[in-house]
Image 1: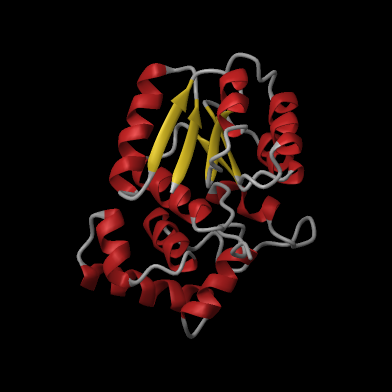
Image 2: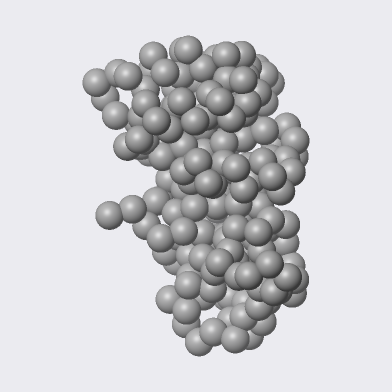
Length: 213
């Protein structure tokens, strides 16, 4: 899997590179520091499976650069990252066609889980913005959205990505029996009976999207 990371903060880029290489061992990562370099890399004959773009890197001009990237490279899934995030930012990214929005303040484990979901063809937005990204009318609460713990949300993201309990355990550094307990609690809280229904609930909450075809 070929992944492009475009970020002008060396320390964060290095940390994210190590995280991706550890979480997705089959990945081949290219790191650039500005939008022009990102576009040059994306124009390469070898297609990237995922591009992770900093919202405020040089040349991006915020969403103007993201919009140009999505228009120029429509076949490449785009994941937007930023040091700050507002509901408007998340909404704008998804409306433009990005497959996810990740605040840089997220824990490394959540970042890893989210990147794996998007790399697998899903969509990810922060749990705090789940209601905004769902199809529910304004003012209507998403079932179960406020009841899941942060750890359960992480597990649900990976369940929705089709990961087995053993794979989830490796990704989150948990014992398989612990994962099973989390999955059982998730099923109970969301009122679902199996992993397919749990994945559908995750998409409804904005934690995952339908796989690409």
